[in-house]
Amino acid sequence: MITLAVLGFEGAAIRRRSTDAAGFANAPEPIRGVEATLFELRRRGVRIALVCEATRSVAEATLAALGWRVGAASDGLGVVDAVVCADEVAVAPPAPYAVHHAMELTGTSDVRQVLVAGDGLPMLEAGRAAGAGWVVGVLTGTARRDELEAAPHDAVLSSVNDLLALAVPAAPAR
Image 1: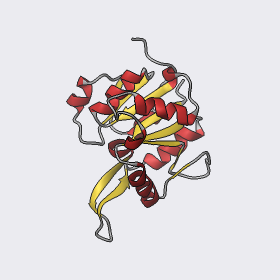
Image 2 (image 1 turned 90 degrees about the vertical axis):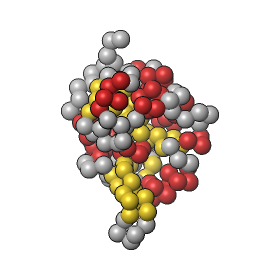
Image 3 (image 1 turned 45 degrees about the vertical axis):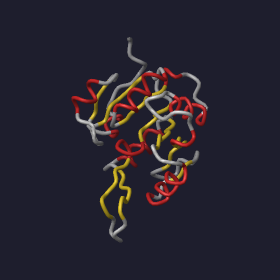
Image 4 (image 1 turned 180 degrees about the vertical axis):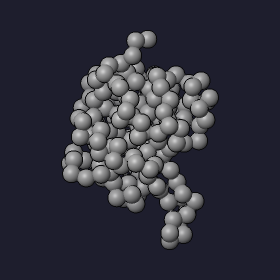
């Protein structure tokens, strides 16, 4: 059973547009359907943590621009349980610290019940190094399928939205 999904923020949950309607560069945009997916995962009892390659201040500004918030409320889309930023861990992915810190922040004690999804090799390697029960590559970022398939993984999906259809009753045998 999966109780925590640790998602790469950029590439798996959002992408950056070159400009927004007001002409601001690097405006964040959710991957199509991701807000409903996050809501449904949380409704099913899965906690959600985002791993951000940027600092806390950049992550907070990005979350605010998206209208997303961090907290336990389940009354709306775009709510996540935790955000782990690059300046909050000793070493960023591919080291396992971001995954372990997400576990700490969400009260998750069994790493075999953690699913890590990312659009690049560092997140997949961090998931495997952390001992996550499932490590999933998603094709919504910059990495190509062959790159993700060359990394340690249990599945490669078109997007995070496909997690809802993925049968994840328990960690796969290794």
